Amino acid sequence: MLIVFEGIDAAGKTTLSKMIKEYLENKGFQVALYAYPNKRSIYGSIIKLFLESKLNLSPQEQFFLYILDIFRDRQEILSRLSKGFILIMDRYYISTLAYQCALGFDYNFAKKIVEYLDLPKPNTIVYLDLDPKIAIKRKMKQKESLDIFEKDITFLSRVRDVYFMMLEEGYPIRNWIKIDASKDLDEVYNDVVNSLKEYLSLV
Image (cartoon, rainbow, N blue to C red; front, side, top):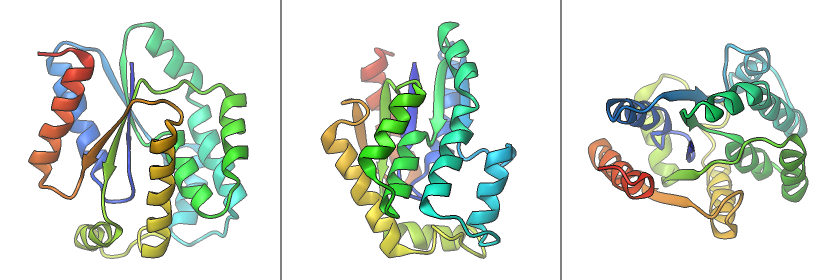
């Protein structure tokens, strides 16, 4: 099973994906966690330079770098799924569409590329919805300087709109779980667990 955490910056994806990994491991499942971009990979290291404003990349270049960063793990992901793992993704190709299509990359063309690459589809997408104003306030408390995406409230609003579009469209799957990420962490965690319990038939 492949569970994806999505949402704009500061929605809590990294924290919650780690918490859910621990929760599922305590239930006896084999769990692996992937986080994108992987800033230690060849593609992720270039993305890191871009996010730190040390390198200029067009939306097209960004799209392909983000997708390649995920695609390099494709065989490993398929192998682990075949062995019964639950895989948790802290961002997946859904993020790539949300962010780079918000910058002007063609949405329908992006979907065709994902289809061509035959990336494994999620079983469920946990979408952590957050107002961009709250997101920026959270990020400013977390770190001294914001990256190129984190500090642009207009851009984050467009990203959120693309997420909503995918959710309403049911892309790439119908099973989106929308969670209000503006609540306290414990409340959000409980909402996620309860949603996944129902989906996974866990007690």
